[in-house]
Image (cartoon, rainbow, N blue to C red; front, side):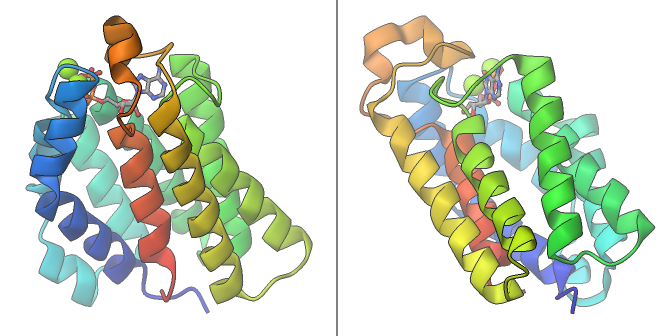
Length: 202
Ligand code: ADP
Ligand code: MG
Ligand code: MG
């Protein structure tokens, strides 16, 4: 089964909107404080009820990638737009099964690292995405059950996001604050962890 992708993404978008103050606070402590605003600027473009109840996978990822690319500022607007654009590309071709989710996430990771130059350990969304891609690809290789693989993927992404707390940043605006970033989870990595957590069960 390819699950209910509209519900997955709508669950995630609602969680990000609900947590906007907390996300803003993280970027205020290790960045310039606009992360939550940038997320809301994109996500408020979407009709989440329609997405949840009627959108196909390709319509869902088309809408959310365009919302980020067209309406959100900051680094995250461009990088999340690109991330979701790769999910749109695979969804447009057919079923969003584990193999195509893994392919989209791999393409997204490669594109984000090519553009931004971040590697794991730099305190960015890459710290959550890279372990998630590894977990997805291993699940595909071992022909795992969708729900189990998505569960392991979400745990890998969550652990990766939490690992950013002790880091100082070497990419993005958090790198400008040096040691002050230590003790602050990277908000981009955190919302990526939520993305995979919301996938479990869809
Ligand atoms: P800005 O830094 O332009 O204010 P945002 O606050 O919207 O952008 O987004 C910050 C998030 O972007 C960070 O939490 C981090 O996850 C991500 N980020 C910043 N720089 C990079 C990079 N070079 N590669 C990958 N992700 C990055
Ligand atoms: Mg910012
Ligand atoms: Mg900014």
